[in-house]
Image 1 (tube, rainbow, N blue to C red):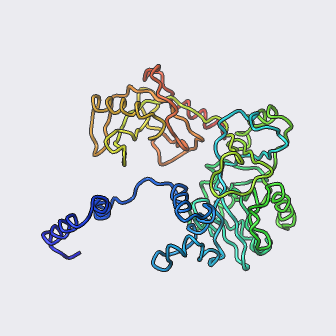
Image 2 (tube, rainbow, N blue to C red):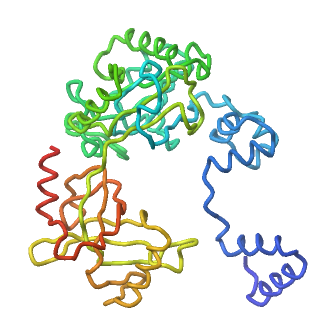
Image 3 (tube, rainbow, N blue to C red):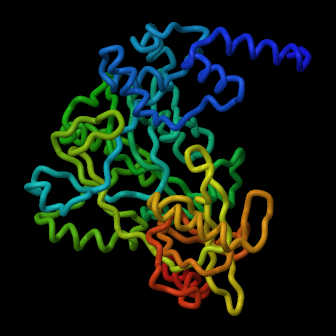
Length: 419
């Protein structure tokens, strides 16, 4: 900084001349501000674990804590030198793969525990040294956002960590995710919000008990401990056991799964009774058996180029439904197409762009896509008055024309049916 352009140029040229090919690549990434590449947390953890010959769960637990690179060496970090120096920190979450086979292929029903897959914020409640901490799965400390749960500071025994779902709950009934959204990311909570969207915590699991890490115990044993903890709470109807679904056949469970939306659930979780609480995802022990998403037929009206390896292709799209004689935007999506389909859409955009607004192209409303989504809610921020949750492209409907897409009234009827 502070150097002339000529001095900067000379510095860069000298660096290029002194570095080898790989070093020049990294140097250019650093000076251009584009060093970041798409590497998942799990991939990074597995790479470090392989290089250091350590267990990946230990590495994950170590790096998710609070640490500064100038205060700890690499070897200290992967050895877990700072773990538990901050008593507030949660454990890495155990996650599930989507069930990609018929449930009958999982074997005997007696080996599995079934629960509802709740549509809220996955979280951990940590009680240590007389203090209470509430963490979201995104490693965000959210204790202050949910005062309804603060009673657990007095009622949970020290050295307890619970895994569960933060939900809006009224009279023991789970409310929609759109109701919960009224309480998210707020610095202050007023009486109206406390009344309209009261918070509850549906507990799935216990990870620490009497200051002992019990994640390696089988689920069946952890569940017994969890039941005992929740039963001893004197404040009822706020921190609750997420109920276990009773079933004696996969056919019966499939029938119950069809009632998920009536309970504001996304489907069913299947967990092996002898499973430990893994770090991240491990195929085979936990499965999420979600109900089919909602779908709507739309037409693409805007396209924008993507980023990274997709920077040269139009991959970010805006979709509309019909509102009378007009088209009204309803969702944006950038996932769901194959590389071949992306190239086809890219060619269409290049040939059929009507207007240009910065990086955005308005295109002829001809390509019809089926959009899948998890929920629908009223929205004052969107022109349509509606917002779709987790929209993505389900398929390109080449068999349909633009005059066959859904209408805004169709979506309003869907909204009314979910209230």
